[in-house]
Image (cartoon, rainbow, N blue to C red; front, side):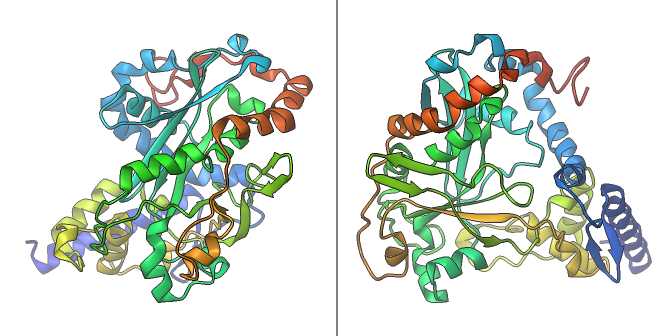
Length: 391
């Protein structure tokens, strides 16, 4: 344990480093709060995330750098792709598999740092059977407990939410990889999140499993998926519809925006020092023994350290507001989540029919208008080594 003078010195030093880090990222600090520059656009938001992205890549380097050449072979050369022959295949990611390495490596190319997901978790890769190469990916994890826009859309009371949040999952990452992203495949990946195959995979994995938090056995019914845009208002999720004969339905409903809080702006090279300070000088606030020892998440670490070094908790508000979307998987999802009905009347939307919709509406028209995907080469994704983004 440090003596008081040494502890005060340590607090002062870390406080200065935190303030300098925030300013270097592009935030404006005023009266104990941080603000975004006026008229910031999506490129500006990407720049604010850059230090956190670099730090995440560097942490992954020792695990993935030696495998990078092999991983790059999983991405298509643009000249391999024939839009008329694209055929998506959903692949669930298993722990310890090559697919898991590819999932982790692919996420390092996102323009914002990707969470690993919390609690329950399902991850999927989407391959193109015509090339055998990766088209995109998505991951589902436990949703945040309190999300105002979602809760108001459902019409939840606090008790409803406590009982039925287990029937909701959050897409913590979702998107297409190059060169398929140039063919608007991000919209296809978003559609596949709502597929029969995903909710069936969820049921297989979680039916009759006991919830860590409530202690109750789960029934495997997944009613709703939520997600948030990466860079403010979304251009991917808007106007996504499922159209199959008489069934003409919006899949993603915009329900509002987040409050603009989180921890990405502390998840850069400085985070290891922040975490070390927390372990040495802060007390975790674990509420239940079965949750394990230590801090619950990064958010708690940040909150504890800000208080310990004399900084305002308002610094946790980065003010990057993200658009919130809900994806009901059943016609009565809202009533079910409010406890008004006991069984879900699921929509029938298998992968093949969702792809047929996407193919007609977006893929083929896009391929006729824009063939820039042909110019993509996988080596441009290299992160490490000579010529790599983090080399």
